[in-house]
Image (cartoon, rainbow, N blue to C red):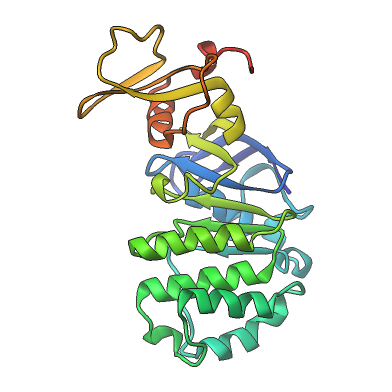
Length: 279
């Protein structure tokens, strides 16, 4: 679905944000795209959606060059941007005007999600709160049934109950044929629903691993003292002791601390030099 080879991109009169970026993703999944502020996550998503054109390199999405913006490309990709706007129409009017652009649109799926989100189809979209408008856009995106869904900071503007509902709706709505790419700073909002983690740093993909692969290679623990820990790969002080990453052993697999993993990677810890072979 996503094929990027030696991609170079820079904004006008700015140094290159990406130089020689490569990334492949063929298998359907829910993938988290993580990175520091300014790492280029939103720019990369816009390149994939055809909203920006790379200066060099190859970028192929679902078999198309995104910036060509061909109808066959646009009907099978939907992007939920961090910033968005709507015309002054009702939900019902918006759906009638735009749903037909997506051949696999699920009207019944949309009805079910709107019901979950407690959104009234007769309401004017711009009369809704920011969080409600975000929920409608997410509902519409999921109902398109596009092969590639791009969600840029989807939980921004959502309250705690809505974030929980977002996770529930997402995992029950996505099919086995879809790739969902979620870019977020709020890693706690998605850590229970993603299948894979991709991290972007200094214009490169510096980490690309499935959640299963992570649990087979590393363990994440909270300990009171480091005295009994052999070869901790990474550690951070926390109330009551330390949060650590260590090589996976014969113990049961641990829950993944994505925040700790992210901090280790952006601090240039070479996790693979410490990990044991897959069990």
